[in-house]
Image (cartoon, rainbow, N blue to C red; front, side, top):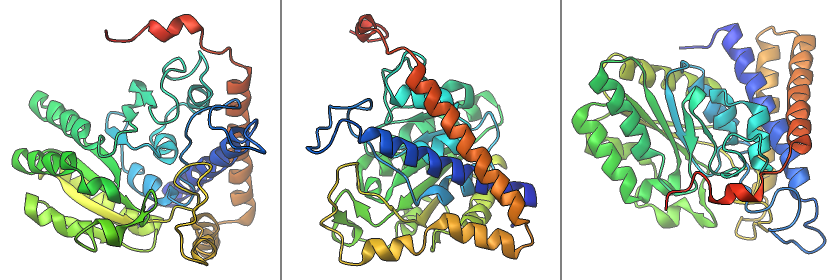
Length: 327
């Protein structure tokens, strides 16, 4: 299965929006945090996890999703949120802790929630799996169409919640797809030292579902396999597990010195940056350079508008600290 021209251009534009958004966030996040790094300082306090390099996973999967489908994501969620259609202005405002944010500034970047497009994420490792099963079960019991996709990192595949969710999905044949983004590092621990198997797709057999491994961070290959898995779920044939080799171009979090990486690894990863590689492929397929330039300009304009909206919005009032809280 290959994407149409329209799908290919949507994938490229969405990847570009995600990258430009994170570049803008990275720059703003560092305001007030130098020369001595203080996570609490600046217009965006707290941790920040960037998804630069992992954009192909989000677009390759979300290109197949419809408005009523559900996505649950991780603590590194920006590319997935953008690909699912989360409002970019409200998302930026949420990251800035502003009243106009998705949750009034309460959640921050690890807890983006947009029910209008059925998107949620969590800072808890492996937390995406259970809610995705719940959404899929709800649709199945009500006889409604729709699938759920749970994104998670390769480290989350060692969590009990992951295995419990796969077991339930397999037993009940839920319309859910589990997508593991394997960027080789669980914070600073290499996958080889934390996981008993080299590839998590082999674990699918233990839960009665197909498993696929996609090397090379290739958006077209991801589009192909994800399309098959999502179509299978829509047809009532149950869940699928996919593991994708992808690349984390940034540290685990902003401020991460990345001393755990072998010498030369970052340079090698940047040489495989998926954005210029996809532009080269689109040009080779006959897309006009001018058309791609316009896409890039449009992406930059969208991001600039969202950042301006977030900066200009009023901060969440202190009184909101005790609202929308269960006690």
